[in-house]
Amino acid sequence: MVSGLLRVWKCRLALVHLRTRNRFTPCLLIILGGSASGPLAEKVSKELGLKPGRLEIKNFPDGEMYVRIHEDVRDQDVAVIQSLYGPNCNEKIFEYLLLVDTLRDLGARSITGVAPYLAYARQDARFYPGEAITPSSLARMFEAAGTTSFLTIDWEPHRLGGVAKVFKIPAQNLSAMPLLGQYAREHLAPRNPIVIAPDAGAENLAAAVAKELDGEYFVFQKKRVRKEGTTTTKITVDAVEVEVKGRDAVFADDIISTGTTIAEGAKVCRNRGAKRIFALCTHPVLGQGAIKRIRSAGVSKVIGTDTIPSPVSRVSVAPIIARAIRLQNSDSRP
Ligand code: R5P
Image (cartoon, rainbow, N blue to C red):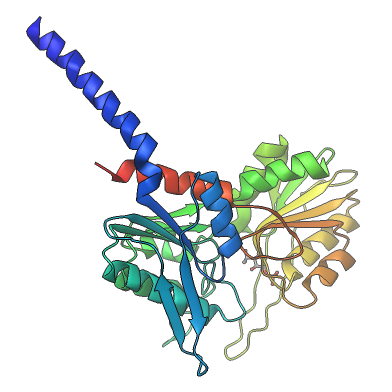
């Protein structure tokens, strides 16, 4: 009887602790947006019911960087959001490193690095002797600076076995594809859709979009020809079996850079009688001429997210970042 009462009392105590923790957890979390991701950090903070942390970043006349964090971060959990897109991705990376190192120096309890777009993902293998495997180099630098956990979005260095293998700290690859799929469903309303992964690496992305559209997906084959000393890439799409006639084709890819991949795929669909062609991507890198190239190939709408601010960034990744930070934070406090 006494032990039963004791158990109930302990349970109540645990419940009070949980409620208290949930109510007060936000005060122990600080969201800082680097200069590349101020608006996104504001959105993430809003999702979490917080005000974004205040910081100051400027450059001295000779280009050196000045960083000042206007928050008391001692013993706080801090998330630094900094998307590492170009141009000047190297500066963004250095700013990130400076911020994280300063946070550690100021006694932050944990530092979650959030790089919605992670630079240097291309070189995920040593194709020729002596080359840098840049995702691994970046991960080591982030860890050395003081990052204690890491989040990115739709970034899967397949040859290195995924994000969790590249980092030694807990690292997670989130996906924007469900949000892009929802957007497509609500705003593009594709009819009898076929979702297309333009290459094998995008299969999971296409599957996630197909789920949202309640449709099927198909994976195209893409071949790249590498020539030492040049960056020329040849893309061919071999899609003998796919039936797209009279259907709306929806491409799903992580990155649109030159637009060649989507354009080549779109041509196949157009030649096979697809009705409308849409392209969804997480990271609209959009090099010069990319949109024109894609449009001329028959794509009527390109939709991206705000991991990289661009004219096609219609979907915000703030909700998925906020959810991941919230989960992480509620797990981390004793
Ligand atoms: C790599 O294979 C990626 O998944 C994308 O398909 C690629 O980065 C797109 O590049 P681009 O737009 O230049 O063809």
